[in-house]
Image (cartoon, rainbow, N blue to C red; front, side, top):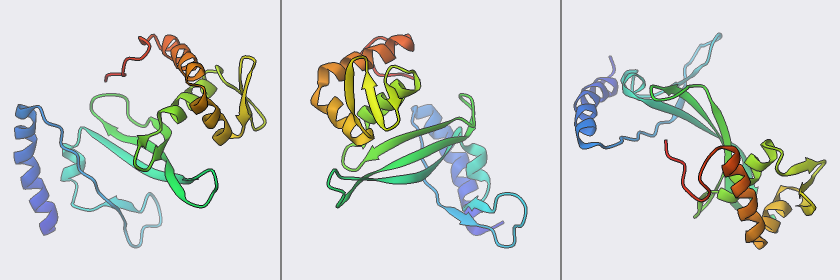
Length: 176
């Protein structure tokens, strides 16, 4: 057993019990490495042995799927990411989600609203045009987001419809 893997195993045995008693959540970030000489199966592996995989209650794989540029297109202002639940002891594994992370802001709430509204057919996308009822939000995702940013009442109305479809109380955060 490698030294790092042995140390991780010892540390996780101690930390997991203490974290549970204290009601804390431990978050570990790891990188993907590639195994050499793998012809079949996935050559990707996380470093540190298998102890972290064993002790984890939830394992998420996060990958960038694209960059978000500013309106002028001269600088990157965020990333579009895909998150896949690799392991979950608390809910259903293997689910996927895509969302935008804006630098200095976090997960784009407005982007999530537009994505949910499009999936639920609250906002209709025909070609590259987005529309809601008799409102034309704009041609392309960026223009639709800008229109919703400039019209907060319309944004709230769409958000309430999404919340009602999911039996949520409007404006309350979703708890797990």
